[in-house]
Amino acid sequence: MLFLILTTLLFIWTFYDLYWKRRNFPPGPTPLPLFGNLLEVYYNCPGYEAFRKWNKQYGSIYTYWISTLPVVSISDYETLKETMIKDGEKYAGRWFFADFVKDFKGGEYGIVNSEGDLWRDQRRLTLHTLRDFGMGKNIMEERVMVEVDFLLERMAAQKDISVQNEMDIAVGSVINGILFGYRFDESSEDFVESYLKEWERRKGTRQEEYFFERQLEALVFDVWSAGMETTSNTLTWAIVYILNHPEVQQKIHEELDRVIQSDRKITMADKNSLTYVNAVVSEVQRLANLLPQNLFRQTTEEVTLNGYKIPAGTIIVPQISCVLYDEKVFPEPYKFKPERFLNKDGSLKVFPELVPFSVGKRQCPGEGLARVELYLFVANIFQKFRLSAKKLPSIEKSMSVVVIAKPFTCQAEERHQ
Ligand code: HEM
Image 1 (cartoon, rainbow, N blue to C red):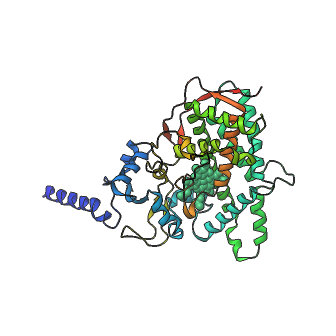
Image 2: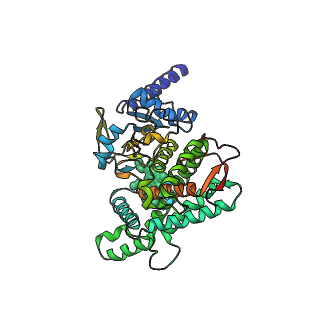
Image 3: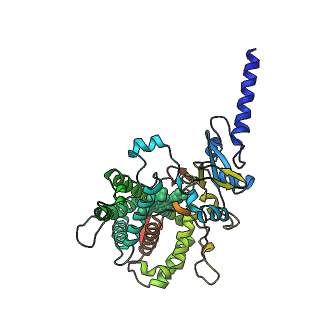
């Protein structure tokens, strides 16, 4: 009797797990009870190969399971364009563990974990404020250049430079400067001050409802944390890859010597003339591929994908890591080849598939600032120094919030005495 009950239960469980719960989702890898497909991601740490394999096996749209949660993944650029870009509103929700966010942030505030009108309003404000900082007097460039100077000084003073540490200090200080400002003279209006001014302007109107202290705290936390790890680790990966490819460092130096012809600092005004440096930064972002699994979104209304009706509230992820390693667009995707971003005539080649900042309505609002930082730090480090390492840094990735490099040090020799 007991045997019959157990067999029946096992049958029901298997039927439910392998067929019933999956029947309305695009096909994907078979989930294990409790784990879903997590083990396969874990055994392929940091995960790229699991997602790429499923992409090849099931096509661009497939479902995998994080424990008991279905995640619909979109993994090639064309499909991302048809869905997240052309039909953006339907994919603009954010999925998160509500209890965790409540404990951590006091509610669904900020940008990363907020939704609906509050998210829309506060995201727009953030974009406008950051954009204004990048225009006119260009507070953004000024802030970054202050930290470029400090970084170069610290590097020159050290025998063995702990790269990750230095990048954390530099990038953290840029965001700190932008959010809170260091000086209080007229030219350093910071993000928080802009927010408070806008709050004042909206006093007494219906739109004041999006302005309260908890929201400001969460917003500042989001901009700080989202902008810190991503940018500082990309810069660390830049040093890892360039140290492993001395010919790339040599070409950067050649370009800087040919175009700049002095030891002066590199500024944004030089950007269009430094094609090779730009190609290197693009290739670093592509190969570093910081988020093997991108942040989860959720559908805001029903969508139809490959004939499957996906209800509102389903987790959906623009799997940008598969696009950045798509061998049809970027042959030999695990190789560091800045030349892939150059046309035959030496001009910069633009790929819409280069999507490290993601796509659609949730695309990274810090992209402008990040681009300024990556370019100015990389160009100025190599303008001033020739870097070497007693032991070449490993290109192997470990998983943290984003993929991180193993700790390493390097040495810096000044190029212009
Ligand atoms: C190399 C640097 C960076 C990379 C690669 C990067 C990448 C990303 C990615 C992939 C997302 C997720 C988008 C999605 O849901 O599909 C994101 C979101 C976000 N990023 Fe960045 N980011 C970088 C720098 C920054 C900086 C400097 C800031 C702030 C100044 C920032 C602020 C944010 C915020 C607030 C979000 C959430 C947007 C939303 O949910 O509406 N990021 N970023």
